[in-house]
Length: 359
Image (tube, rainbow, N blue to C red; front, side, top):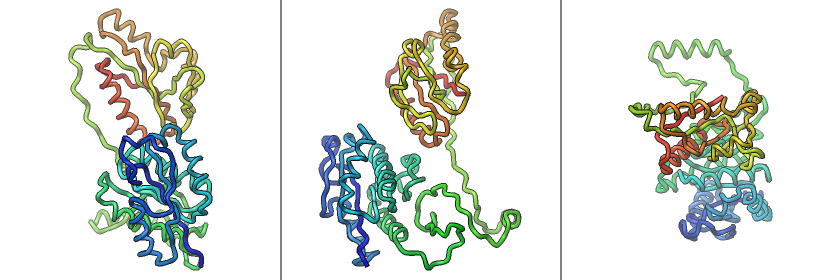
């Protein structure tokens, strides 16, 4: 039987090249294990025996990769192709923002290019939507847990590369999906039909009765946990307050220079408010845009705020406005970008408060 051929992706730090001073380094390839690759080599032997081999490690600087993700993944795929991988690992990225984004993008690109199992590991708030295309092991920000995370990644990789054709499965499509709790990865939001011996009603009543009696039961629906942040103290004197406008309604400069998406958009930017109102368009597929195109004040109430300035109700309007179209964008990415936008507003120091407008 042929060995399982494994390719690994690392950033410049874990590849042993350097820290931020080397973050602009381009792609490189090592056919001998480097950095965590030595740990992967050991774990692969522990799990596969002699039936798997780390054939190459692809590495790249975080800055280099993030400057043009599409170009970077295309470059990486060309480097990976000669190694004909059966399994791909990226990271672990832990909680490093650029590194996690690169790991996720690499997994997505490799999956699309070679249709092989792709596995990474990162903290919940860093996984973006990549858990839908990759198996992402749960971890925290502590790189000291590297050994445990790599062991989990290899264990999961073994399941994904094993032949399960002779094993029974309740799934109608006959696919064998590893248990998320057993393998410690984020649920992939995959819907698959399965043969179940009891109806939904029977299962629901059984679980409800168990809950009422205080008996153990396992839910079939795991709701997303949203953090509730308490409101800051109210502003006592609005006449000394400068307002900044932030919106997810998709008002952007004409031509959409940042190429924001109408659905599942993941990026944001700030624009000069006066220049924006001169020539604009709406990038958002979640509502009827014509009313905003006719008058952008319906989304960003500049006209009303200007009246408040004239009447002395507020001090002024921030010259910048922040836009992130958010139609079907995952809440975690909105939370992540929202924190970055808030930090940017605070660091610029022109605004005292923000008005958030939506659709």
